[in-house]
Image 1 (spheres, rainbow, N blue to C red):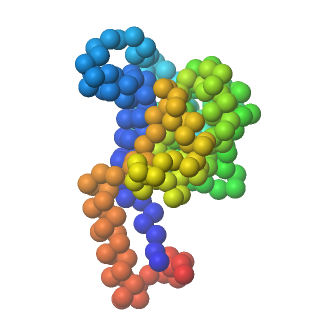
Image 2: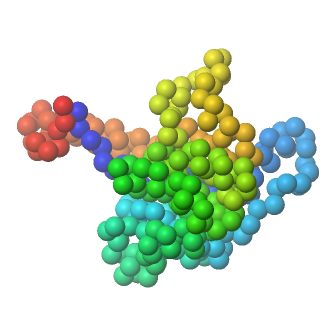
Length: 238
Protein backbone atom coordinates (compact mmCIF):
# COMPACT_ATOMS: atom_id res chain seq x y z
CA UNK A 1 0.00 0.00 0.00
CA UNK A 2 1.39 3.41 -0.97
CA UNK A 3 0.21 6.96 -0.44
CA UNK A 4 -0.96 9.53 -2.95
CA UNK A 5 -0.09 12.56 -0.79
CA UNK A 6 -1.16 15.25 -3.26
CA UNK A 7 -3.14 15.32 -6.48
CA UNK A 8 -4.95 18.63 -6.99
CA UNK A 9 -4.95 21.18 -4.18
CA UNK A 10 -6.96 23.43 -6.50
CA UNK A 11 -9.82 20.92 -6.65
CA UNK A 12 -10.29 20.98 -2.88
CA UNK A 13 -9.68 24.72 -2.51
CA UNK A 14 -12.17 25.53 -5.27
CA UNK A 15 -14.79 23.27 -3.68
CA UNK A 16 -14.33 25.12 -0.39
CA UNK A 17 -14.99 28.38 -2.22
CA UNK A 18 -17.99 26.78 -3.93
CA UNK A 19 -19.46 25.77 -0.57
CA UNK A 20 -18.94 29.29 0.77
CA UNK A 21 -20.55 31.00 -2.22
CA UNK A 22 -23.51 28.62 -2.42
CA UNK A 23 -24.11 28.81 1.33
CA UNK A 24 -23.83 32.58 1.51
CA UNK A 25 -26.06 33.33 -1.48
CA UNK A 26 -28.49 30.50 -0.68
CA UNK A 27 -27.98 28.92 -4.12
CA UNK A 28 -29.10 25.48 -2.90
CA UNK A 29 -32.37 26.92 -1.61
CA UNK A 30 -32.93 29.20 -4.61
CA UNK A 31 -32.42 26.31 -7.03
CA UNK A 32 -35.12 24.23 -5.38
CA UNK A 33 -37.52 27.20 -5.24
CA UNK A 34 -37.16 28.03 -8.91
CA UNK A 35 -37.68 24.38 -9.85
CA UNK A 36 -41.02 24.70 -8.02
CA UNK A 37 -41.74 27.95 -9.91
CA UNK A 38 -41.29 29.97 -6.73
CA UNK A 39 -39.40 33.12 -7.71
CA UNK A 40 -39.70 34.88 -4.34
CA UNK A 41 -36.52 36.38 -2.89
CA UNK A 42 -37.64 36.08 0.74
CA UNK A 43 -34.93 34.61 2.93
CA UNK A 44 -32.24 34.66 0.24
CA UNK A 45 -30.22 37.66 1.45
CA UNK A 46 -26.49 37.01 1.64
CA UNK A 47 -23.48 39.23 2.33
CA UNK A 48 -20.61 40.67 0.30
CA UNK A 49 -17.54 38.46 0.66
CA UNK A 50 -15.39 41.37 -0.54
CA UNK A 51 -13.81 43.08 2.45
CA UNK A 52 -14.46 40.23 4.89
CA UNK A 53 -11.76 38.65 7.04
CA UNK A 54 -11.10 35.03 6.09
CA UNK A 55 -9.33 32.84 8.64
CA UNK A 56 -7.49 29.84 7.22
CA UNK A 57 -6.43 27.06 9.57
CA UNK A 58 -3.60 25.29 7.79
CA UNK A 59 -1.66 26.90 4.92
CA UNK A 60 -0.20 23.92 3.10
CA UNK A 61 -0.88 23.43 -0.62
CA UNK A 62 -4.67 23.48 -0.29
CA UNK A 63 -4.73 26.28 2.26
CA UNK A 64 -2.42 28.35 0.07
CA UNK A 65 -4.60 27.80 -3.00
CA UNK A 66 -7.68 28.81 -0.98
CA UNK A 67 -5.89 31.93 0.33
CA UNK A 68 -4.99 33.05 -3.18
CA UNK A 69 -8.56 32.60 -4.41
CA UNK A 70 -10.04 34.50 -1.47
CA UNK A 71 -7.49 37.29 -1.86
CA UNK A 72 -8.84 37.64 -5.39
CA UNK A 73 -12.26 38.28 -3.87
CA UNK A 74 -10.79 41.24 -2.01
CA UNK A 75 -10.70 39.59 1.40
CA UNK A 76 -8.29 40.16 4.23
CA UNK A 77 -6.58 36.84 4.90
CA UNK A 78 -5.40 35.73 8.33
CA UNK A 79 -4.10 32.26 9.10
CA UNK A 80 -2.90 29.87 11.76
CA UNK A 81 -0.22 27.28 11.08
CA UNK A 82 2.55 25.83 13.23
CA UNK A 83 4.78 26.11 10.14
CA UNK A 84 3.96 29.40 8.38
CA UNK A 85 4.01 29.36 4.59
CA UNK A 86 6.97 31.54 3.66
CA UNK A 87 5.65 32.19 0.13
CA UNK A 88 2.46 33.68 1.50
CA UNK A 89 4.43 35.75 4.02
CA UNK A 90 6.92 37.08 1.45
CA UNK A 91 4.08 38.03 -0.91
CA UNK A 92 2.23 39.69 1.98
CA UNK A 93 -0.90 37.67 1.19
CA UNK A 94 -1.48 36.38 4.73
CA UNK A 95 -1.18 37.70 8.26
CA UNK A 96 -0.45 34.90 10.74
CA UNK A 97 -2.30 34.90 14.03
CA UNK A 98 -2.69 32.64 17.05
CA UNK A 99 -5.63 30.27 16.79
CA UNK A 100 -7.53 32.30 19.40
CA UNK A 101 -6.96 35.55 17.50
CA UNK A 102 -8.12 33.89 14.29
CA UNK A 103 -11.34 32.72 15.93
CA UNK A 104 -12.00 36.23 17.25
CA UNK A 105 -11.24 38.14 14.04
CA UNK A 106 -12.50 35.96 11.18
CA UNK A 107 -15.87 36.31 9.50
CA UNK A 108 -15.23 33.09 7.58
CA UNK A 109 -13.12 30.17 8.84
CA UNK A 110 -11.88 27.44 6.51
CA UNK A 111 -10.15 24.28 7.74
CA UNK A 112 -7.21 22.81 5.81
CA UNK A 113 -5.23 20.79 8.36
CA UNK A 114 -4.71 17.04 8.70
CA UNK A 115 -6.40 15.14 11.51
CA UNK A 116 -4.05 14.56 14.43
CA UNK A 117 -4.41 14.25 18.19
CA UNK A 118 -3.83 18.02 18.38
CA UNK A 119 -6.30 19.00 15.66
CA UNK A 120 -9.15 16.68 16.63
CA UNK A 121 -12.12 18.92 17.52
CA UNK A 122 -10.04 22.04 16.91
CA UNK A 123 -13.48 23.56 16.47
CA UNK A 124 -15.32 22.75 19.71
CA UNK A 125 -17.75 24.60 21.96
CA UNK A 126 -14.97 26.69 23.49
CA UNK A 127 -13.58 27.67 20.09
CA UNK A 128 -17.03 28.55 18.75
CA UNK A 129 -17.76 30.71 21.79
CA UNK A 130 -14.77 32.88 20.84
CA UNK A 131 -15.93 33.39 17.25
CA UNK A 132 -17.85 36.36 15.96
CA UNK A 133 -21.61 36.00 16.00
CA UNK A 134 -22.60 35.01 12.50
CA UNK A 135 -19.25 33.47 11.57
CA UNK A 136 -19.31 30.88 8.79
CA UNK A 137 -17.30 27.64 8.97
CA UNK A 138 -16.10 25.76 5.89
CA UNK A 139 -14.59 22.28 6.28
CA UNK A 140 -13.09 20.35 3.38
CA UNK A 141 -10.41 18.81 5.60
CA UNK A 142 -11.41 16.03 7.97
CA UNK A 143 -14.73 15.54 9.72
CA UNK A 144 -13.29 15.14 13.19
CA UNK A 145 -11.75 18.60 13.09
CA UNK A 146 -15.20 19.77 14.24
CA UNK A 147 -17.22 18.71 17.26
CA UNK A 148 -20.50 18.29 15.39
CA UNK A 149 -22.74 18.47 18.46
CA UNK A 150 -21.10 21.73 19.54
CA UNK A 151 -21.61 23.11 16.04
CA UNK A 152 -25.28 22.10 16.10
CA UNK A 153 -25.77 23.87 19.44
CA UNK A 154 -24.22 27.05 18.00
CA UNK A 155 -26.40 26.82 14.89
CA UNK A 156 -29.50 26.42 17.07
CA UNK A 157 -28.70 29.57 19.06
CA UNK A 158 -27.77 31.53 15.95
CA UNK A 159 -24.20 32.14 17.10
CA UNK A 160 -22.88 30.49 13.94
CA UNK A 161 -24.05 31.99 10.68
CA UNK A 162 -23.68 28.77 8.74
CA UNK A 163 -21.51 25.80 7.84
CA UNK A 164 -20.36 24.37 4.53
CA UNK A 165 -19.14 20.80 5.01
CA UNK A 166 -17.66 18.27 2.64
CA UNK A 167 -16.74 15.97 5.53
CA UNK A 168 -18.43 14.65 8.66
CA UNK A 169 -16.84 13.05 11.70
CA UNK A 170 -18.94 9.87 11.47
CA UNK A 171 -19.11 9.71 7.69
CA UNK A 172 -17.80 6.14 7.40
CA UNK A 173 -20.59 3.89 6.15
CA UNK A 174 -22.63 6.91 5.04
CA UNK A 175 -20.65 8.92 2.50
CA UNK A 176 -20.11 7.22 -0.88
CA UNK A 177 -23.25 5.09 -0.35
CA UNK A 178 -26.81 5.45 -1.63
CA UNK A 179 -29.05 5.40 1.44
CA UNK A 180 -32.14 6.74 -0.31
CA UNK A 181 -33.99 3.43 0.10
CA UNK A 182 -32.83 2.61 3.63
CA UNK A 183 -32.88 5.94 5.45
CA UNK A 184 -30.30 7.67 7.61
CA UNK A 185 -29.53 6.04 10.96
CA UNK A 186 -27.20 8.79 12.18
CA UNK A 187 -29.38 11.16 14.25
CA UNK A 188 -26.64 13.81 14.54
CA UNK A 189 -26.16 14.09 10.79
CA UNK A 190 -29.94 14.01 10.30
CA UNK A 191 -30.29 17.00 12.65
CA UNK A 192 -27.47 18.82 10.89
CA UNK A 193 -29.21 18.41 7.55
CA UNK A 194 -32.34 20.16 8.85
CA UNK A 195 -30.62 23.56 9.08
CA UNK A 196 -31.25 25.86 6.11
CA UNK A 197 -27.85 27.50 6.69
CA UNK A 198 -25.90 24.23 6.45
CA UNK A 199 -24.70 22.81 3.15
CA UNK A 200 -23.29 19.28 3.12
CA UNK A 201 -21.60 17.46 0.25
CA UNK A 202 -20.45 13.85 0.49
CA UNK A 203 -16.64 14.18 0.48
CA UNK A 204 -16.47 15.19 -3.17
CA UNK A 205 -14.04 18.12 -2.97
CA UNK A 206 -11.32 16.10 -4.73
CA UNK A 207 -13.63 14.98 -7.53
CA UNK A 208 -12.36 16.70 -10.68
CA UNK A 209 -11.08 15.21 -13.93
CA UNK A 210 -7.63 16.66 -13.23
CA UNK A 211 -7.44 15.24 -9.72
CA UNK A 212 -8.62 11.79 -10.79
CA UNK A 213 -6.06 11.81 -13.62
CA UNK A 214 -3.28 12.71 -11.20
CA UNK A 215 -4.39 10.03 -8.71
CA UNK A 216 -4.34 7.42 -11.48
CA UNK A 217 -0.95 8.54 -12.79
CA UNK A 218 0.59 8.57 -9.32
CA UNK A 219 -0.84 5.15 -8.53
CA UNK A 220 0.52 3.65 -11.74
CA UNK A 221 3.90 5.30 -11.13
CA UNK A 222 4.01 3.90 -7.59
CA UNK A 223 3.21 0.40 -8.83
CA UNK A 224 5.91 0.68 -11.49
CA UNK A 225 8.46 1.92 -8.96
CA UNK A 226 7.52 -0.86 -6.56
CA UNK A 227 8.00 -3.46 -9.27
CA UNK A 228 11.43 -1.97 -9.97
CA UNK A 229 12.20 -1.89 -6.23
CA UNK A 230 12.60 1.88 -6.36
CA UNK A 231 10.25 2.80 -3.51
CA UNK A 232 11.92 3.82 -0.30
CA UNK A 233 11.10 1.81 2.81
CA UNK A 234 9.38 4.75 4.47
CA UNK A 235 7.01 5.10 1.52
CA UNK A 236 5.65 1.59 1.98
CA UNK A 237 3.07 0.60 4.60
CA UNK A 238 1.77 -2.89 5.22
